[in-house]
Image (cartoon, rainbow, N blue to C red):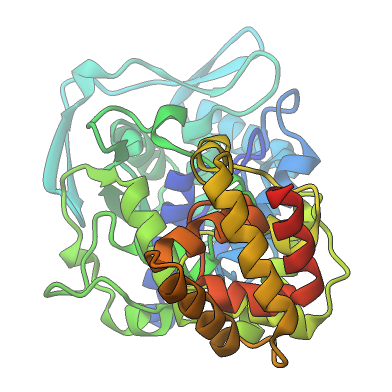
Length: 426
């Protein structure tokens, strides 16, 4: 049975590249009805922190990635690593140097790896020095404890980033020395920025946590990560995880570096938001507002109407908070340029006074009645409709763009609309 693993280090938040590694391992396990195992690489006791581990676990769950057995922690297995190292010393395959245990490398060998993504890759042991297994401080070296644990977990396939390719021959030598058949290896090209440089802050967020805070949906982020190095075939871009599990084939992974495009991810997130029902977005929007310190006691029925107006306009949940602040507070942001253009002149003020006067008189404060009053005023005064619409929009929302004006006004309600128009006209 297929057994793969994801091995995060709790020395920081979950990197977007690590999230992709976890996702592809999860897909591989689910496609073959195998197991995904979680190993916590917390051998660095000074840098490993519980807050990072908790966040990594939360992020994996948020992405929909689950695992099949209780995670193991390397920090609890130091005795195992030392015992295995001592066995290799007794067998003459390693030696002690003070408190350190070092593996004796056989020179002049060629190690060939049949990589699942890159094909055959060769290494010469003349280019590799003797390998530390246990450091002088008693902590295990990465390549050694990694092999010990993968053997303990009965891992059959290792899918990881290209940055680990150079570790593979060293690990194969450890497998041989321990008398264990190595698993199959597959090394994924790393994620780069859109400019081809190493992914960094200047390309956008580099941790899953940052995308959560900005209001990206997990299904959108998962869909986008799926396409970084793998394709379901054809020009298909929108793909859910259930379909991806059925279609996933590691042979379809490309051996070239994948470029992270924030613009495309943001577009994709907007598509997922627009496809959701208003009721599905309601709790997500409320949480986003609360997380950004914009908690509101607006009733669900009103908030649902606002969501209905804006869900096709926002690309992230955070955008909703910025776009719609004028619905929930009088302390909303105002575009100075728009205010100067549409509210400063005497003509605009007169139009606002005239329009607000007519809005007082209409019986039904619905978007259709509001629109009728607006167009009637424009026709009578021989104005373009925009000469009424633009000042009114800025007066009631502080913004030059947004949802349909008349629908906005209906949701805001007559008293709030008139109060803001009259204030702007004063």
